[in-house]
Image (cartoon, rainbow, N blue to C red; front, side, top):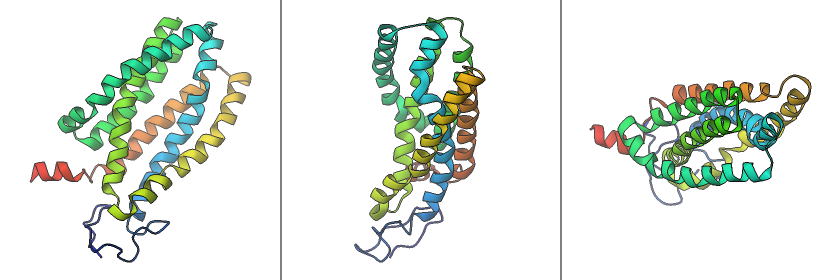
Length: 220
């Protein structure tokens, strides 16, 4: 088998079928998986509080119907194609881990002006900006985590890395419904903003010393 390089989950490939490779749960990539679980669980809480309720919140907050919300999401889906395509170039300039942490923190902060916006147009503009930022980090985070995984265990890491996030997402909407009805319409989104900022911090702390291999190669 290959010798570990010191990066969590990153290993040099050895002979095909080496012991411990391709197993479930993964063995060589287990330290990486634990770090991904820690970061993704926090993000799952934020997504569960925020994501399923954005359309409902727009309706309750501004009284908009399906037609207005449909236009907003159509614009968002068209515009975010360009930010997705820009992700690789931004990561080359800033560094991948720094880029992911910064855009996740920006996502968190942009929730606040969105929920404080006085009109549907203003809230939609902040939500569009948030989604533009979000689409920069998404492909980078996925490619980074798989790049650190042992080559024979990438499928298992991809399948298992989001399990805590899914569990958190299945619980947190229960709190959103209660808080919206009993406390305040914006409060769940503000809590989600806090959790997403904590996710950015957690990701930076856990992975800042482990840049992807291509950055190490450029620095050498």
